[in-house]
Length: 196
Image (cartoon, rainbow, N blue to C red):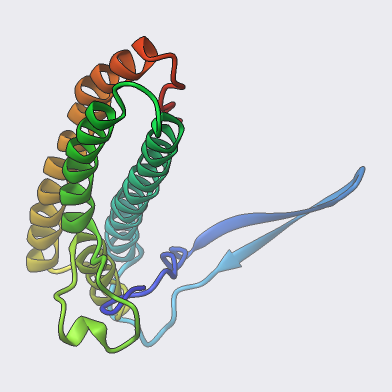
């Protein structure tokens, strides 16, 4: 759920484009032009700067949301391993290691995404997180036919760095902690957690 922003993409910059429609073996391409609104005082180059920043913002928002999806997939598999271990020797050790790993993953997820939101009004009680802040920035940058402000660029840099810190933490868990967990559960003849 996004409180501060949306999921709309950037608006195309004025210029020449082609659209292709394909159905089965049939395909047709038509050229078209996107023209600059004559009421706009900014140049195509200014709007290109806006478009470029919006694409960067979109990519970072995708990275944030992909990380949350990945975390949830890994946690689900960890839960499955713990379920398979029930009643076996070493089940407590597996559960303890799983809880430790899930705690690390949850801490990362909670920095990227507000996990307590259940309704549209919950952001009033629980602050928005990185994915929502990035989406909100996209709404601000895309709110006018104008180049991005220096402040918007600075906020993007800051949010991007904060997100990267969480993505780096996730990479460490996936590359270091998860293989150690997998080695342990494989020694107990249990299936490993597979990261896609």
